Image (tube, rainbow, N blue to C red; front, side, top):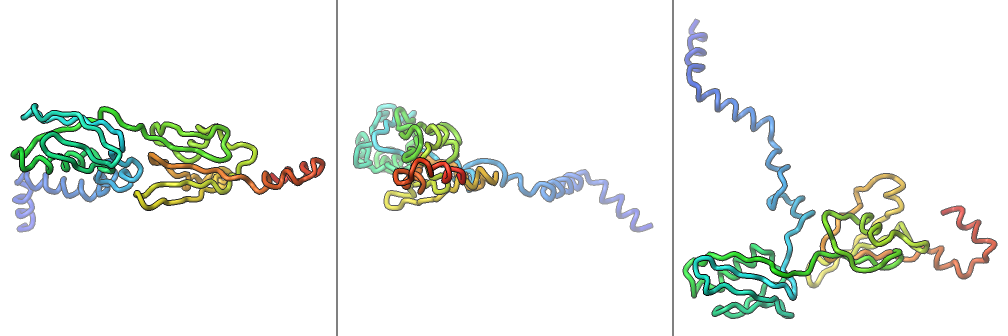
Length: 232
């Protein structure tokens, strides 16, 4: 009898129901925050890195409270920009938010808590380069999410002398380091496992080497060439 009375007393508070609902929701959906794309998601940040300032970029700087400091600057060959009344600062390799903070720091002794915004007026468009044994080697705009196999297709596909099993992907990690990945496109397409079909980043270079057969072809008699080609 006493237990029934106690139950009725607890259920008479509507706040308890809300607390129970929130707890159940947190237990039922623990991964919602992790699955939401954004700058705090490491996988999303890796696949979609922020643009970094490059040489020759033109930046419009807007001070809404002190428009006399509004200006347009160009990233010079040494990576610096020249700010009105604040001198030179290095911005090459910085993202837009980092550039805003660098400019704000440069003006901290001139303006009190400066409010500013920047706009990239002109910049080098993201690109990748495909070299070696593709039908149309060259430099291409990197538009949207593009993988190694898609980039090869954009470059006209493999030519007859290409080594499909040892495509090289060169990637600048920073100004002193280059990462090299080997991609076995032949095995990927044959097995249907596209996990190693890496997503390109701006500035990546793809190199398709010559196959062993193409190196030996000038020395193989024409009448014997058909026998070798049957295995490919």
